[in-house]
Image: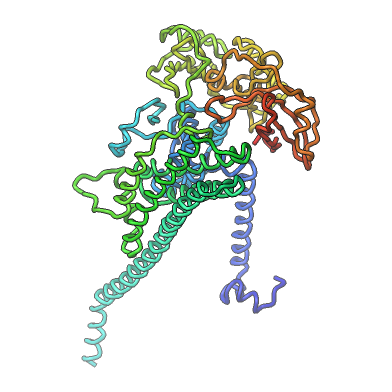
Length: 167
Length: 470
């Protein structure tokens, strides 16, 4: 509004700068307002967590263990923390989450499409606080789905909901 | 006239063909642009993987060189420098290795080797800085690691010759790694430089013996035997009774089911008792883990929704303390309680003759809406608890205070504490605990009461969700 006309053209394009229709201006305003609101909400969401780790862990739990009992959600979080503590896996939560091919929901982007539920966030916090219903497991899978034969050679320690957990 | 009308009619008759032609051209153009975009993306993704691979090569080479240097340097000063290089390069190598799109099965041992080499180098560097010498055992381990890292570097160099021809398609490598998880009948995986190369490298690393040293990634951590689980074996029915009595509400009408064959680390057999509330009773469900040996409760979790917060942190600590005395845990002192969302987490540690025993820890989660106990975690306590024979401190609090950093202003009187350390022979250290501030931050400093060495410095970090130590 306070920009010279030329700058305005460069910024928003020739076509839109010359718009006379009030509806289109309202549309632009609404789009901007929505963007600001989304940005603010997203920012508040971020500020709530202790650090990025809780958020990332909660997202993975939401993507991998939605519909599981609460204990099953904590268990998936605990597996991630057991991986971080194991020399065989990357030594950070982000390293374990983004290890290529480790999680289908990360490979297909589901982890970013689903925002974590309150339950998933609470499960992530419990896992970070050391609550581990799997007692040190580093693998989990759904036996009803096709998985590689190799994984079955691991010794199964616990079954929670639809998942089995192994060391 | 006639020609004109027939021409116009001809044009009219041809319009479906013309439209079809336009559609074909448009979709060809579209397909090509999509194909070109996909090609560009594949190259971009592939280049990231190439970068990780070549970084890995460099890191492993540097590990090898730094290990040789650590053996060749005569002064502790240079040796500590070389060992620090090993630590940094090995942890970078591990990160780069785990960035590659190869299944975990193929990389696991190589990854463990790199983590342990780095961890061991760090621990040894600290020892050398403290004692100025290296033990024969550590020396031999370093020599072994040097040999092993040479093999690893050679294996990677062989792969590099094939990878750097540029014919490796990383996107295909990633797809094959994935298809191994979901095998499709009738498709056989084509031979693959990357996977075969890493399989060979991993087999070489396999020959490396179990590595036990004073570090967090040492193999002895896996072999810890629980000390606090004592007593006679109980049956599944007895476990149900233990669970019913333990939960913080009346569970006499709950139905109990027991899951057996659960094994915790250190070969602990566990009964998982599920207490399900009768329908419409308004009571919560609970899961209680009871050890087969001795019938100790390891974990308890109560599932229910939370209402508005009505009680504060101090009150929740009182509720947690009351719960612990109800279930017969005595001499427990609350430590750093924190508020996390709608609940509070209250850790308790065992106190023996006024000495705080940090390894013997129990965590209690309290609902802040009405003060109910939501969960109980005694795994750490049960793993480490035993009646310790505490030594007499060979230095007193004032002598220990002399050893503190001049930047630390002590705010509270010193007290004796047992803290967990990562050494193999003695997993605990008997220390003087000092609480103080330095440049506006709060710290806990632990001075070994027997040896007079500074064991640990922990920072107290106050967040919006309570305080925690790092």
